[in-house]
Length: 381
Image 1 (tube, rainbow, N blue to C red):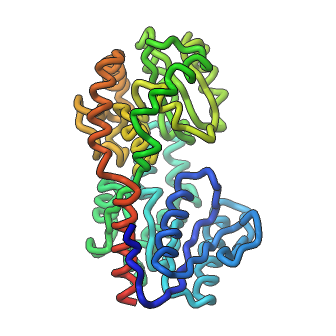
Image 2 (tube, rainbow, N blue to C red; image 1 turned 120 degrees about the horizontal axis):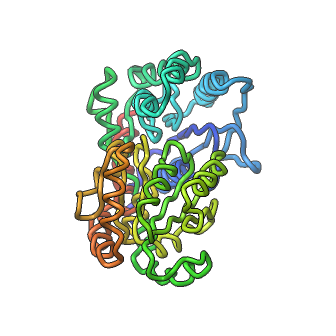
Image 3 (spheres, rainbow, N blue to C red; image 1 turned 135 degrees about the vertical axis):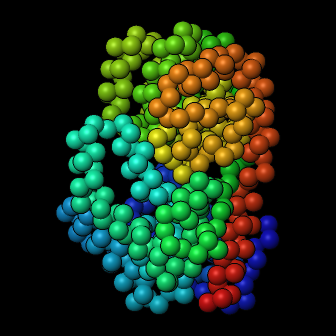
């Protein structure tokens, strides 16, 4: 791969408050860090905690007595640390005003709150509106996007790019659309070789229609809406990969709805790929999601996708061709889409189209776009 090596060596800081080695956002941070290092630069991660000593990591762990203090004190301390070390470029993956580059991986908080309020009671909506935490995040977000030091915002979907442009006073040229890449060699239709083995382990009939969910944050991403729809698919099964504090509630709903025998909660999996191979369709009825990696992985694995209008991944979906898009709370449309895919053959045909759609969006394509962005930013500094 062409690394685009720049003659001058720069010192770059990347800020990420919590770094979990199994997190999707963290994989993106690591990839961006590698791209810059391949260009010959020194990259340092600023984070709260790290598992071992490293010259490439600065631990910055101020008190976090409340949610607001957790965010605000880290933001101040991390930016102060970056400036004290004299980095040439500071890229944040947190809402920190004064960052030079920001990756909007969490989307726009105001948009998320709007979608979330649709599922809340009047009283809960008022509590959300008065929440000191949400008010802090909204303020920090506005200050971030309208700060004069901000040079670029990396958006992983057109949805997020448009939301930022519409809500904030920011030069549109700063909004860079760079989709996450997917490893199309790992996530490939050949994963169907795992179909028999995984289904046997989970006691799922070989010819049954299987709907797959992958992710955490069950309430936001719509696990219970998927399970409710499954009631109408009399022979369908669901595999839920991931964990959430509300899992016990979801399991109780399965019992109440009489579908426990057709739902498999398998928790967090170190290797998710075999589950894509065992499924017929991927379902993510999320209230709001900038662009989950799981949609790209599912499509690359040859699965049609059912997702919502407020998911960045919907940009890749053509209704009836490679999946379906419906409002997250439109239960009827989701049931209809799942019923349409309640056929192994129909799901396979649409899955082939999904694979073709995602093939251009490789890790190499993302690397090349990011390389070009960093070259331009650093050559101007």
